[in-house]
Image (tube, rainbow, N blue to C red):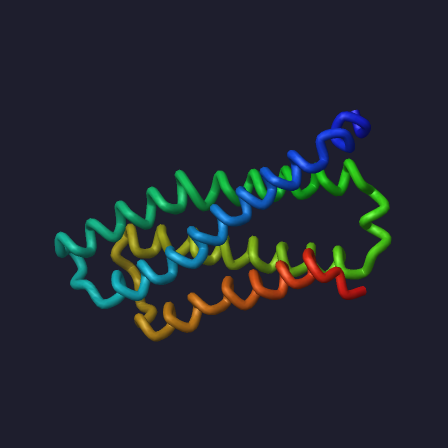
Length: 148
């Protein structure tokens, strides 16, 4: 089985990159939606539209993309276990775990908005919007440069 994964490593890598791009697009967009949603009046057409947008973005793009990114990334490690000897991959995996935690926070916030229970400000979501960006930059640098 490992041989099949190894022979198709470049396909796994390409699909992993596509999945990560999709995941990050959603992770960067969802908090931006929260910024505007936080400033909209509860029960307004605008607020209800944001609820639909947030739900669909999470359920149909972000969640599947994250799952694909994890499955394909772990498949790449299975295909090339020697990679685990490098220090950079451990830091990258830690940052991906943190990114997954941020994903969980955003998913929870979608539910909070859906119940009209948000108490956080637009400024909070502007700051939160930077977290996936910083993590993404560090993860890409580690994956490409492999500094240690």
